[in-house]
Image (tube, rainbow over the protein chains, first blue to last red):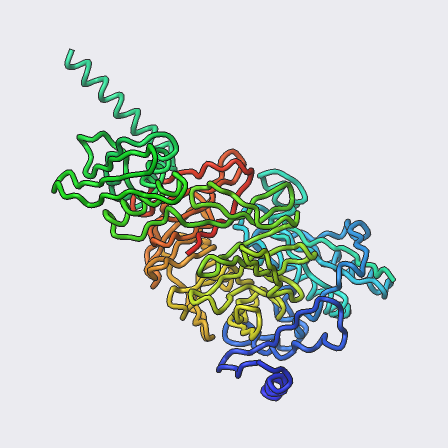
Amino acid sequence: MLLLAVFLAVGTAGCKKSPKNVTTIEGRRDISPRPDNLNGLKVNTDGRNGVNSGTPFNGNDNVKIGSGNLDPSGLGSRPNPDDVTEDPLILASQTVSFEYDKSSVKSSERSKVEAAAAYLKNEPRFLLKVEGHCDERGTDEYNRALGERRALSIREYLLTLGVSADRVTTISYGKDRPAVQGHDEAAYSQNRRGAFVVLKPKQ
Amino acid sequence: MSNHWTLLLTIWVGLATVLRAQDPVIDISNTADGGVKQIPIFVGGYTGEVGQVLRFDLEVAGFKIVAEDSAQYSLSGRNETEVEGRLTDRLSKASLLAKRYTDASPRTQAHALADDVISAILHTPGFCRTKIAFKTEHGSSGEISIADYDGHNVVELTKDRAIVAAPAWAPGRRSLFYTSYRAGYPDIYSHVIATGERKPVARYAGLNTSAAISPDGRRIAMILSKAGSPDLFVSDIDGSNLLQLTKTKEDESSPCWSPDGSKICVVSRLSGTPALYTVSARGGEMTRLRTAGVTRCTEPDWSPDGKTIVFTAQMGGFQICIVPATGGEAKLVADGEDPSWAPNSRTVIFVRRTKGQRSLSLLDVPTKRVKNIPLNLGNCSQPAWAK
């Protein structure tokens, strides 16, 4: 950890010396895929199991899905929207539903994530975008963060199923893109969701 | 006969009580202590737009426009060519102000007079010539707009037809930071208002949102998920020198700065439901901010005088609440969401939902009086008051 931090500090001009208990992460600006950089952010992950993060990941099989413990590498890069064609229909039937104000993947919804993982195994060229959405009951920015947490929980499960980290990107729409209009539980439950969009490289 | 009058009066008073109780905007009856009384002021001699501006500004500031004989203060003057004003304390007979305003539109002159009246009586800075930024929705996308605090002179800053969110002013009011999905993903941009120059300051994989600029204008607090969960980060004003301040497994959202720049207040779901936490801007432990009496707290904004944090609680609907910045008993002050302090640390702009539409309203916190901003722009949300 320390070695990595030192290595990054040396390798990146203008990177300030890290104060105690915090990790300086060099910003990277481009959004196009750069496989050589996919693991460049590993330095920030140890802290996830630090003072604020609850139960550390202990490496056994009894892992709570969507708890945030499973993501060892941070998010690497995101595909350039100009380089891919989006297909939101192929996996539309596998949309994952969430409990109110919860971000973990329910056991009853795992088969949908597993179906998405199986699809990706059969289509090795394709990438996946996971959209996180919320019902209208939270405030705007709270929901934007919650929607991202939901998408990341799905991503974490995909990774445990063997999907490569560089194939799954996340986006949160908060409550900006409800699946259905309405102000009752029937509408809310359809709007609390993680949806899969298959990304097909154009080349 | 006198019995009839008594009865009528009783009915009238009863009716008035019922009407007041039914209108949550005028009187929040379920708070422990009622608001303080509005200050009675007489406003005479003004016509048209100038008269409207003066009345609106003074009502927002905590005054009540009354007849001269029941007023504590009297503001009189005219606006034939230039706006003139004389302010007197009717109890002490003291003259507090006598001014004539030139070199601006009648509207701006009226705002300037209102600012002088407010600071002469309340000894707080006037806010009548300040700006707000907010989000306007057009179908499933939106734009960032800027207006005078009272909703006049609206300008759409963006023309992207993309989802936008969370506008935040840099001190000095020259530039705004906001989230836009214009490149396909939520990224944070800086935008110089005068020139239109726009730069991405955070566009990492995952979520980049909720920028808040430090009071010295040199740092950005924001929510990024690049490390695997939505966490609080700070960076230099251009996005460089990122520092990760929270590393929770749950999501953080909506950071705001203490006015001395030493602390950040942020929402975390660390305990399972959203609550307010403070953390040193240089890093360290998160400390839960006590908000006794209310639950599900989001969208904090720290008052410029450092004393009070205003936020949204969610108990059924959304409620605007205040709590001492050191934590303590939270007080409900209005129904609504996403509050932002005015520079006077007294007035708050927030979002109200009426008939399925979201619109902007102004709240005078001590008197708990609410005035709607008359905008005809469809759904408006996420207001930020320039400081």
